[in-house]
Length: 236
Figure 1 (cartoon, rainbow, N blue to C red):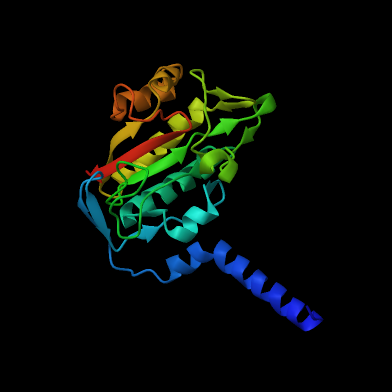
Figure 2: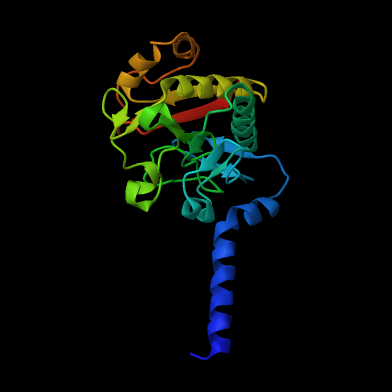
């Protein structure tokens, strides 16, 4: 390969990587400003004028660049605004917190494998905030080797190796999300998390308040929600 061809190849590869990494920002810039419409239910529905969540912010990031490139971070515009506003509130009230959001839905909604819901733009997965050795705040690794975050296996106390679930941060996030949703004409219709983690939340006043205010699924879901908690929204 000549030097000219090598340079052309490297330049092309760099452009491809840039487009891949920034695909979400490009898609957001091209989105219609028409308000979203969620049709049907979270388990049998579709989404009109869906909007993507941003890739990252001061205290949060998305779970996967590949997921973003495919558009698997799309929600109703009011859900998007509530999610971003909750992170903004936590940035000021809980500056040490770091958060990761997971799968949402397709730009047009519909069947979203392997999930049973996430079909009409009103469902979002959030990975559990974690602390590492010495209680240091960190974020859950969500690369391909960890199933984009969904392959972690936390025990009944919220531990996986050196990582431990920060249940206070979970409660802070859900409370902020609830407030942000209500300001936008939404409510949290359902929270799914591992049953034993509901007991862990009762150990703090903030956790007990969240449990009393929000509708948590009673009993186990079809898959154990230990590495993430699932939130369904609905009109208030």
